[in-house]
Length: 335
Image (cartoon, rainbow, N blue to C red):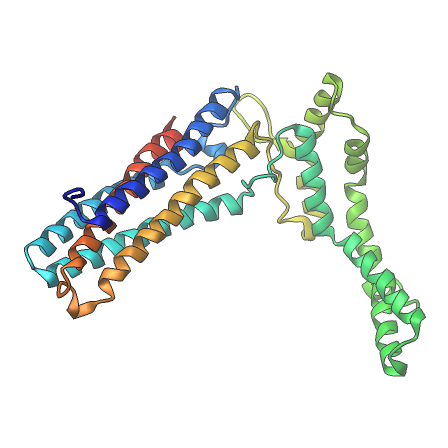
C-alpha cells in the first residue's frame, strides 16, 4: 500500500508545491504592479541594478545545481568522499551567491534605494536634501544639546563638579566673551553652525512654502531642484554651478551631502525588489542548512541508507531555489 517513493521525498514534493504558490504570489503581484505603473524605473543608472551581478549569480546557481547532481550520483555509487567534496563545492557556490547579493544590497543602501526613503517627486527630493543639509550642519542637534545642558544646569543636581562641567560645555557652545576678538572660541560653536544653516535658509524657506500639489507647485519644485543641482558642462552649454556646490565650497561640513534624484514608483520598486530577492536569499540559506545536515556526518556519511534520501531531498530543494532565480533574474534585472 502507498506510493513507491520514500515518505521524505513525497513530503519534499508536497512542500515544494506550497513554495511554488508562495513565490507565484510574489512574482504575480510584481507583474501586476509593474504593468499597472506607467513610468516604472528601468534604467540601471537610476535603480542601481547591476545586471552583470545578477547574470553572474544565475551562472553560479546553475553550476551549483549541476554539482548537486554529481554529488547525488556519487552517493548512489557509494563514492561517499566524492559526494562530500561535491557538497563542499556547492556550499562554496552558495556563499559566492550570497556575497554577490550582499554587494548588490550594499549598493542599494549606499545610494539610499530603500523602501519609504526614495523621493518620487522634485518636492520630495528637495525636502530630503534639506534633511541631509540639516543633519550635516548639526545646528538643530547642537541647539537641542544646549537646551538640555541649560535644563540640567537649572536643576542644580550633581554638585559643584557637575555644574562646572556643564558650564564649560555651554561656554564652548555659546562662546566665550573673554576670548580674543575674531577667534572661534569667542563666537562659539552654535554661531558657526548657525552660519552654515543660514547659507541654505532661503532654499529651505522656498521649499517649505511651496505646495507641489498643483501643476505650478510641481514646476516650482522642479526649478528649485535644478537650481540646487546645477548642470554639467556639455558641448552646447557651459557648466551651471548649483547652489549645493556653492554651499559645499563655503562650508566643508556639507561636502558629503548628496542630492537624491526623484524616482517615480521608486519605493514600490524597492519594496518588490527586496521582498523577492530577500526571500530568495533566505531560501538559499535554508538550502545551505540542509546540505550542512549531510556534511555534519563527516566520515560517517553513507553509513545510514537515509543519507541518500536526505541528500536527494536537499537537492530537490536546491533545484527549486535555482528555478525561482531563473524567473526572478529576467523579471527584475533585464525587462
